[in-house]
Image 1 (tube, rainbow, N blue to C red):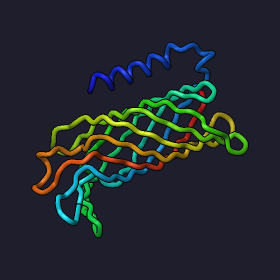
Image 2 (image 1 turned 90 degrees about the vertical axis):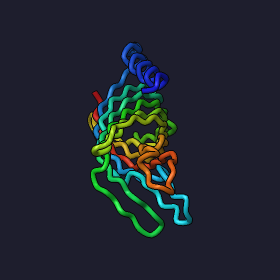
Image 3 (image 1 turned 30 degrees about the horizontal axis):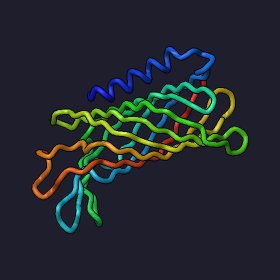
Length: 201
C-alpha cells in the first residue's frame, strides 16, 4: 500500500472515532449491491481497438457512516468476482471467475439538496484501494479515486434506501507481461449503479 493512501485511511478512521458525539451524532450501517461496467484496462494497437478488461461484475458492499447535518464520513468494503473479457465493437469473449477483488473505499459526502418529504441528494468523493487476485497469478494492489451522486429515500423507522451512480479510475489490474503482442496497458475506468439498504443506529 502506498504511504499516502495509508495515512489518508488512518486519519479518516481516527477522525471518525475521536470527534465528539455532539458534532458527529448519527451512525448508520449499510448493505448493498453494485453493477459495474468498465472501459480502458488495455487496448489493441490496431484499427479494431479491442480491449482486455474486467467484464461486468456485481459487487457486494458493507459500510459504516457517521453524519453531522449535511456532511458525512463513510468507510465501505466491497467484494466481487469478475470475469476477464476481450471486448471489441461487435463481440465479447469472457473468461468467468478470472478475478476476485476486495476494495476499501473511505469517502466524504455532502448533502446538496432535498427532494420532497425527506429525500436527499448527496455527492460523494474519496480514494479507492483495491486488491485484485487473478486465478493462478500473483495478486496486485491498485490505488485510485471515485466520485458518486446518490439519492437517499427514508423508508420509515430507522431504515432508508440509497440509489447511486458512480465513476471511478484506477491503474489497470493487468500487467504488461500478461498481455499478448499488440496490446498495451491503459487506466481502468469504471461506472456503476448501486442500491444500498441503510440502518440508522
